[in-house]
Length: 241
Image (tube, rainbow, N blue to C red; front, side, top):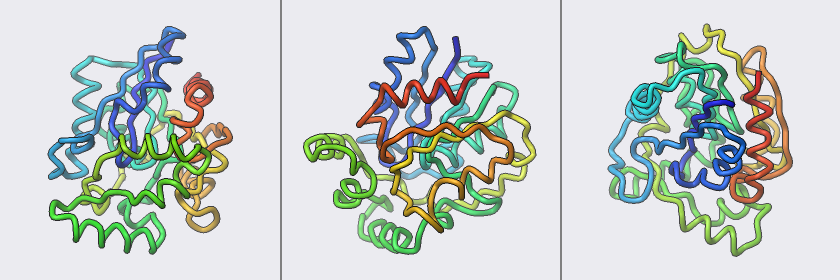
């Protein structure tokens, strides 16, 4: 059995992994779903990207986890890449699920299309606390387009504003790209949260991993809500030796 640490993406928190974690635990796996610093309803949003990374490092070290399969979704990819630099000896494999793999020196903001960049900057400026709340139309049409409207609305209500500063942090990743930790990329084939083509997830992000295992499944960026059991099976496929 494996130890999984599942790192959520923007607007999410660790509790939202519940329906993915349950089938993994039912198979006997040890599954951890920590909430990244600054995320979740009521959290202090004044955090840096370093704070986000430290919260996951602290969880892994605090629970004395070793031989970990560390998975990041979306923004979580930027976090697990940095976590790998800090505690590589505790990790067995890195899994990026439709996740950012920033080019060295880039921020997440550098890796998204200009229309998102402009929208998020405007939302942060208007927020009063330097956060970005994903507009429902983007959630509905680009993030969870494979869900019925009722599920799209119910899951949107679970989201919370995203700290903006971690989007802007430049990530040198000088150590990450030298690591020899095995890595996998899970690609949901209908994920259009990043527009397919020039800005798409795969192969733009996945190809930066060097040698990696590709695992694919049908579904949107939020297949954790629309088909969690299938995602759980694909996580096992991506995380096995």
